[in-house]
Image (cartoon, rainbow, N blue to C red; front, side, top):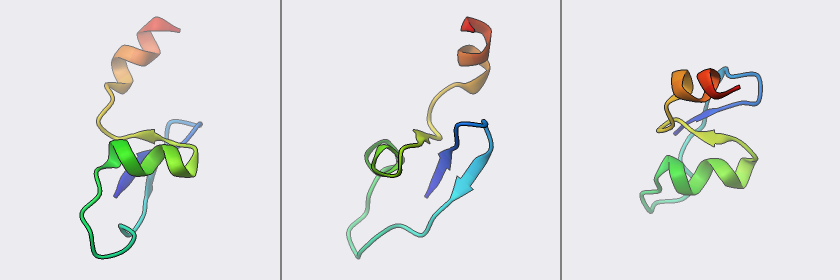
Length: 46
């Protein structure tokens, strides 16, 4: 599972449990952004 930290670096986690989980579901539970977001687009907005 890959998430994006507040400093825009990637964080990699082992998926919890036996059930498949998407990064959109998992990352917010650890207060991070899912890796499916377009980082370049977000940076342009700031």
